[in-house]
Amino acid sequence: RIEAMLEACGRFGVRLPPFSLWGEADYRADPTAAARILEGGLGWNVVEFEPGAFAELGLVVFTLRMGDWSRLTHGRGRLYAEKALYAEDGQRTPHHYHIVKTEDIVNRGGARFVVELVKVDRAGAPLKEKFRVLKDVKTLELGPGARVSLEPGESLTLTPFLAHAFWAEGGAVLAGEVSLANDDRTDNYFLPALPPPSAIEEDVSRRYITLRDLPKLVALTA
Image (tube, rainbow, N blue to C red; front, top):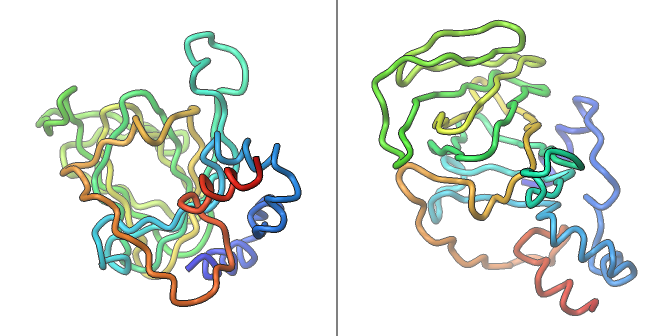
């Protein structure tokens, strides 16, 4: 799955930073960088939103950069973030929303990327009211459950309390996210809430370091 995303990056001219290919030896050789990667939640995350259903409800994410969200109230500094996303045809990320983060979702290459939208209140309950979103430079006025298709190069701006689900349609998609710096552990609200992550059974040797691997690996380098 990670290799499929790397292949798509090569095909569409998206270059990931060198630490995307780091193995355990690289982390051990540079413990300061390893700690920075862990602190920012950088690197690979293979997300299975429902146990055993990755092909239908899954996403591959690589976080390239993450600013300091604790300084958002200061209004200065590195307050931005960037991720690369990869979804196979029909692979869906369920509805979720944020209360702090504003983000642009960008189709970097491949097939269509479809985003389904509904405005929610502060408790996460769907609202029946219309809302506006920015698709590149055009403002769209939409209603609950509206779907916006993004062709390669197009983007959509998602503001807080705008719940969104997205999926690839007609083939695989390499997408991107450009956003306000955020803490993924506290600013992702899924509708409904996700079950606890399932254990990973490693039946082949590990080739890429993921977010699940980082705490133990960084502890060994300390």
